[in-house]
Amino acid sequence: MRFIPAKTALICTLSVILLPGWSLAANPSAEQALKLVPVQSGVDFDRPTADEAAKCKMLAKKIDGRVGWIVETPNGTILRRFVDTNGDNVVDQWSYYKDGLEVYRDIDINYNGKADQYRWFHTGGSRWALDKNEDGKIDAWKSISAEEVTAEIVAAIATRDADRFARLVLTPNELKSLGLGKERAENIAEKAAKATAGFKAMSARQKTLARNAIWVQFSAGAPGVVPAGTDQSTKDVRVYENVTAIAQSGGQHRQVQIGTLVQVGDLWRAIDLPRPTAEGQADSATEGFFFHASLTMRNEPGAAIASGMMQKLLADLESLDKGTAQATTPAEQAKYTKQRADLLQRIASAAKSPDQREMWIRQLADMLSASVQSGTYEDGVERLETLYRKLAKNKADKNLAAYVKFRQLTAAYFLAMQAPKADFAKIQTNWLKTLEKYIADYPTSPDAAEAMLQLAISEEFNGEEVAAKKWYRKIVGGFPNSPAAQKAAGARTRLDSIGKRIKLTGQSPLGSPVDLANYRGKVVLIQYWATWSAPAKTDMATLKELWNKYGRSFTVIGVNLNNDVEDLNAYLTENPLPWKQIYERGGMDSRPANAMGILTVPTMILVDQQGKVVNRNVSTVELESELKKLIR
Image (cartoon, rainbow, N blue to C red; front, side, top):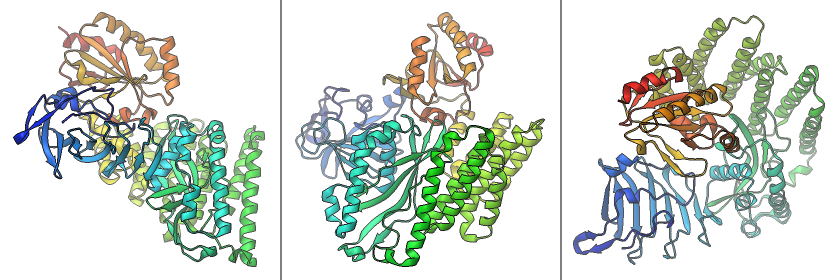
């Protein structure tokens, strides 16, 4: 059986001959098989180190009656699976695993040795993509969830990829299959066409999402069914209204208004041009397409008045935002923020559904908290407190009250720290007590994870590592899918790393692999740094001296945590470094940063010749002394 990888450039040939009784000749090794990577980028799968790969097993097996290979760890955990599904002795499925579960598969459906379909499974998602010309780029989706559509839209905006967005928009043929009434179908066709046509200009113009922005969360109310017979429709239609994607860019959370999503078979489709909005800013047109009064009901006087009122408020908001450039003085900025907050509260009161109301209140809370922290509206703390007290009276608003409360607490803490003659030690002590009370009051709120993380970080910086690890453990246990959990799990790994081998793999800015395991026999300093960190750049001079002095026995691996790779490349062009760099998008929340729970830069970890950590927070002052102990 020929073992042809999906990316033949990586391994040109790995020939395998199956003999009677599963006797094998010219076997590919597990290490060779583990060099294969998915055709599609961004897949989170297990990547053993070189030492770990050498211990793995490559086993020939029958899989559902078909010939295949499985790569396993010594304890039997599956890492890869390669299958010949049609009996022609050529692999045509390449599967990748995470924690024993298949998360991604490349598929060669026409059996010519090239992948033409891509599927995600389990924790990897549920997408199924088609690549008709087998060039490694997705041409169409066979299946994709609403959540994954929003992630794709965020990626399309961040990378300014109009084709990627167009693959997500409802097509004319799909629109026909929905069985909508003539007028509604025409309206959707017009919206979808405008969305596709306007995407390129919008993505080039927007400044909210940087190219390394990452999708974080899907936000919307429950999906609903528009029943057959509504406005002359002939079929039920399942839709999401007022969908928002939460993304992370430049170390801040950003919102992208997605609008309406419509289900067509196994696909969810967009019909609106997405609108990225900065944190604390609201979008001016998110009323929804399906979930409001039907065309006939809209003629009723009460409905017309309600719709007219909302439209006027939205128009007022848009007009106010257009004049924000004229608000240059602190007094003008405070006046603008107050007027905007007043409008958002009125819009929330006029919202037609609980989901819409909640969305506007959340945006109001974000704006007020951001304005306090930017120093433009100190009264935001009091307004947030008033809003919180109002929401706290209603049990149905408990989650929303928790959301507002956390932003009020954050704004109040910032304001206290900025006060003249502030007693920082006292403020910090009170802040930690406040966070603990918030966690006790709202233990299941998503913001409780962030509160725990701040407590853990504070304890760690104060040298109370046992207490810090307790909070890190609670985050991972209580909020395993939160961004805070990734950082917390990495922090625990770092704190417990002394005397242990750690994994560090990634790609250089040019895409070449970097793996700590390949440096066995040398002492390695891992430097987490960023071009915006003056201390990190100052350390470079000392590291260069030590690299030159101990170069045969010592090296450095840089892990850059810039948000934008262009900034890194510009710095390296002017200040070349002789050692390798790892870079992945996401900055302080990137995968390499979270893997070790990096909280600040510079952070430097010293690893001995066996790959074991000897100092997890070494400074340049003590570095040469440490090297002399390790290098004889």
